[in-house]
Amino acid sequence: MSKNNTIKKSEPVLMQGNEAIARGALDAGVNFYAGYPITPSTEIAEIFSYELPKRGGKFIQMEDEIASISAIIGGSLAGAKTMTATSGPGFSLMQEGIGFAKMTETPCVVVNVMRGGPSTGLPTKPSQSDIMQARWGNHGDAPAIVLYPNSVMESYELSIRAVNLAEKYRTCVVLLSDEVLGHMRETVNLPDLSKIKIINRIKPTIPPEWYKHFPENPKYPMPMASFGEGYRFHVTGLSHDEKGFPTNKAKEISRMMERFRKKVEYYIEDIVQIESFFMEDAKIAIFTAGITARAAKEAIIKARKRGIKVGLLRPLTIWPFPDAAVKKYLGDKKAIIVPELNEGQLSHELKRVMGGIWNYEIRKTKNIVELHKNSGELITPEEIFQTIREVK
Image 1 (cartoon, rainbow, N blue to C red):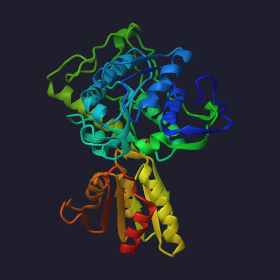
Image 2: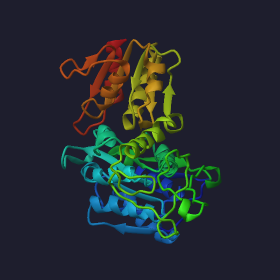
Image 3: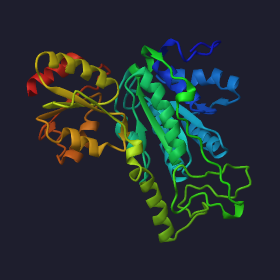
Image 4: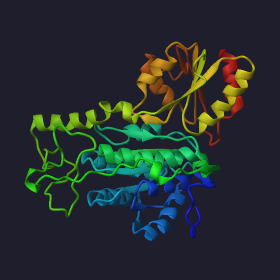
């Protein structure tokens, strides 16, 4: 995206993954960004820094990631659509804030362009090691909506979707990417904004004295007042009642926790997205996400040319985990290969759904075959193809 020119939607554009995330968020209406630069996500902040002022929005570079997540929560409570972006170390620092956003049901989006870890790790190398952290990083029971694209175009599309889901279900949505996906460039055709569904929060129309910021039986999207609009409500990280004031009453706490669970569980068909690739007649399946799915597709095409019936099931929504799709598409397969750039985070969850038992020694349960790499290098199509040959 040029600093001086606006992209014409009808023209093919050579675009970077991080740039696509920023462009998608801007098209979804994000008008406040607070963040701290960290490799390999920095381009997202850079683009917001010069695009938001031109659009009447606000950009602020914070002193650290804790301040960044806190700022976007405050901005959202004041009525803005908000986003921040980071990578592994910063994502760890944001976890308390992410939990606070979920507890207070405040819409916001956190992008994590994953890199190798732990600690400082491999700042310029890809990883998929934050998948579990994206679900379980904050303490306590809370909903998690986590998306993961595998192309530059999907980075744009899922950035919009992340903002929409945050606004619709009033929660913090995490958009995962990785170093290679964030920095690779592909030609994309951006759709006309008139053809994109954008979800904006609904403002309450009832008298202020009737307003409940945390209704017992909400409908989604549900009205959400902003600070300064004349509606009185309290915001706290403590367990709270329908108006947001702290409570120790068991029934009120139970209703609050049920609301967290139901907003994801009851609308799972709206939230979960999967891709099925050559799964109609597949005897062997590959289950993987993000950048690794690209190598898997190449391996599948190569295997198909040799008469091996293999297909791919790819979750675009990592959390909530696509249990129903996994059972439907993978339950009868001879083998399920799970390549990932970590020590087995997707396969761990796959085994839960398939009824297996995690075993660090055997590295496989029933028909689940794991293929790991955590050295900062990508898993290649040839490595996946060789695994297919071994299990066919």
